[in-house]
Image 1 (cartoon, rainbow, N blue to C red):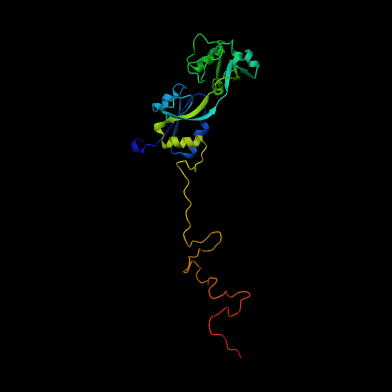
Image 2 (cartoon, helix red, strand yellow):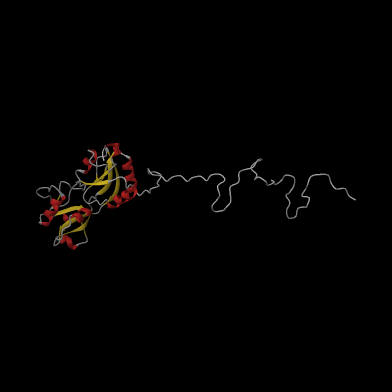
Length: 266
């Protein structure tokens, strides 16, 4: 369909290592009428995809220039060092930056870790991408420090990885253009933040409970609501207490305080 009859859609970008399946599933459950399209982008292209309108929102890695982009930090990943399986590092559960001081550590151009100073000795040339760096590790050229999700994504049977301490960690965030915070973007923000369908900040609040019409039969009690009578809301046909004495009942005299002339004594 085209024009005003076309169905709206939502484009979600994500960088390698991020798995948006959980949030996409919830989107399809809540908004089945709005198609969601996944757009895979490289770490370096993610921010530009949002700025250029290639995606409505996206999962990217911080830091990001927030001059025109909003970002909600989602989670932080553990950093690991990728090594050949027969490397000395593979004998340990975790290593530190100091343990890599004499090693060649590759630093690809699309590195997602915000290094003040990369560890180890630099390679003669920086690889263009993380996959290129993985190939060099397999060839025995050097080691590579990456977020754990990337080590899993580019796993090879001849490589392994170990946790590395004292290093920057990659933080994944949901981001979008601040001046394009559409209703659909708000819907997706609500999903990733765990809001329910009836959340007060959602766009689809629950319908208010309908008031029961006056006089409608109460399904639980089986009684009908009685309209208020005249004279201060007393029920019709019932004498209010305090007028003309007590009502006839247990312990009350038969005449019940009846008005009239008193009987003559004989």
